[in-house]
Structures are given as structure tokens and as C-alpha cells.
Length: 97
Image (cartoon, rainbow, N blue to C red; front, side, top):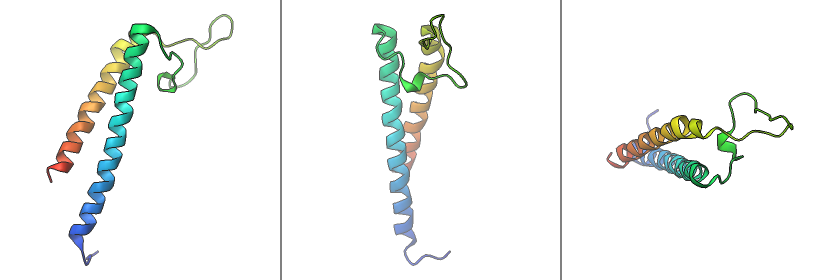
């Protein structure tokens, strides 16, 4: 595995990692924005990020139910914010190499 240019290989690897982390940060920021909009104004209740793990609940008329606002506030938002913090820390570690 001796590479002729090991520093260049590490730089390329760091660049791809940085891009992946930046994409993850963008997705998490968008998810947090949509969750807050849903809690404040009821916008985008059927966004795919709110989808349940196994099956959707259906109402009496057979229509898919929206996520419970307590679940969004107490579970979804804290998890996204924690993941965002971790991604930002990882990006900082990559940049400080």
C-alpha cells in the first residue's frame, strides 16, 4: 500500500469526507427548519423525513395521519440538533488536520 504520493491521497480522502459531512449538515439544517415550520405553522406535515419507521398510521377515513407535534418537539428535533452538533464537530476535526 505504499503510495507514491501519500499526502495527496490523504487530501483527496479528506475532501470527499468533507463533502459528505457538509451534505449531511445541509440535510440536518433543512430537517430542523421543516420541523420548526411544522410546529409553528403546520407546514409540510407529510414531509418524508417525518415518516414512521414501520407503517403509517391511518385515520378513520383511510388517510395518513400527520406526526404528533409532541413527537416532533421532544424526539425528532433534539435528535436532529444532536446529529448536527456531531457533524459540525467532525467537520471541524477534519479541517484542523
